Length: 133
Image (cartoon, rainbow, N blue to C red; front, side, top):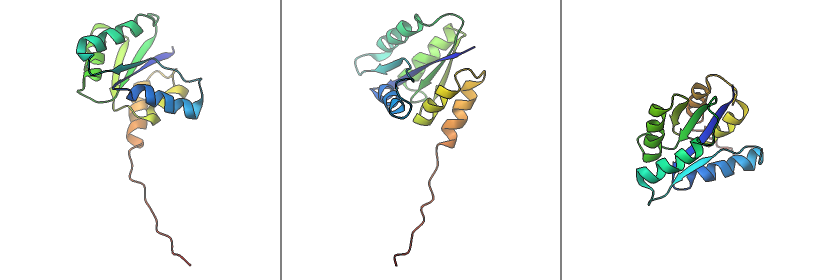
């Protein structure tokens, strides 16, 4: 069974992360996004999500990647997950997670894989100084 992904964020972050993914993978990656504006609040954000959910067939598992645990987008997604067993929510969305999702949409435990990818992407690169000759 193929998973469906929805990206949710404060401001335009979700849309711009999708645009960044398109720079790398091309237009073949295209997920619905919910970008919460300052005027939306909980009700406006919920309305945006409901509109997207209504377009997804009933037999698909839905994973919502949200920007920040405890923020309104994640809270709205979590409320939707309580009402719809197809939905699971993963917070801490980053570009690596979005890119990996494209290649793994059919995996049964995609949420777990995306969390692992997100964690693996948080590193402090080792910088080596070079000697000038």
